[in-house]
Amino acid sequence: MADTNPDSKPWHKKVDLIQRGDRSPTPWGTLTFIGLRLLDLPLQHALLAPAGLGSALLARAGITSAAAASPAVLHTGIPFIDALGRPTSALLFVFACGSAAKQIYWQTVLSYESFPAGAAAAVALYNTVMNSTNGVLSLASSTSSLFSQPQITIALPFLSSSPVDIPLSTLLGLCMYVFGLSLETVSEAQRKAFKDAPENKGKVCKVGVWRWARHVNYLGYSLWRGGYTMVATGWIGGLVMTAWQMWDLSYRAAGVLDDYCTNKYKEQWAQFKREVPYKILPGIY
Image 1 (cartoon, rainbow, N blue to C red):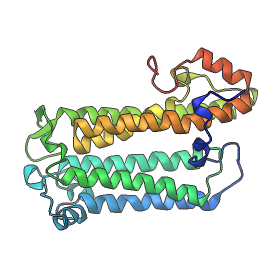
Image 2 (cartoon, helix red, strand yellow):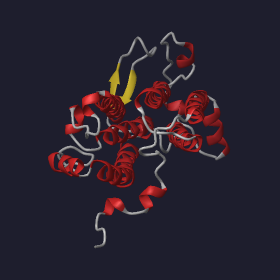
Image 3 (cartoon, helix red, strand yellow):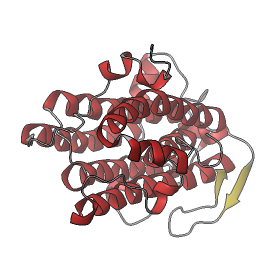
């Protein structure tokens, strides 16, 4: 009988970068990933700095910069943060640092599977491209979240020398980033703790947040990626990125993982799918 499961199409496997079931050490992959994720941070700082790389790229392309619309000066007491000038730029740089730290923690502590250097470079490059795109778009007057409406005026004496007009989309994006990154980290930590317990050998993890959805960690990633873009570009960019990541992860990554878990856990996985009917979005999908 022909396989009618759309999640088991062969094309899924062609784009999967994780070596499912292979736990052989890949030190060069780990070092490559850590090195490239750390190198992303000075790049993001250079892109976001006033009159920095991002502004130069926009000027060369003939695109108007939004820098003049945000005259607030940071005074956090942290020199490399204050050097960014704009609260939005500082927040995006903090996002880059937080996501890099989380992903390095995932690779060095939480992940079981092999991660060859080629796959590590591809994942790191994807994150750098996404971060850089967000940074440059946040500086362009036509795409910057600085003009997103509605806006709220807030006095932040610990951050800025004058009251700051903060778009509501920025506040929502910040919440999405914090919640999403926390959810992704907690879900992966819970799964590792479950798998490390000898009595759970060969069992499907369905404790904690894994009762919400079968691929709840992908929900976390989609939310923080979407929140990152929302802070950079406003409502439309943030919602489009969130939807894109959910679609990609639910059909591509979840499809690969569903095939793998079906073959590995058999009836256990079928039972888990009956108990937790939602793939990625609890209560909806």
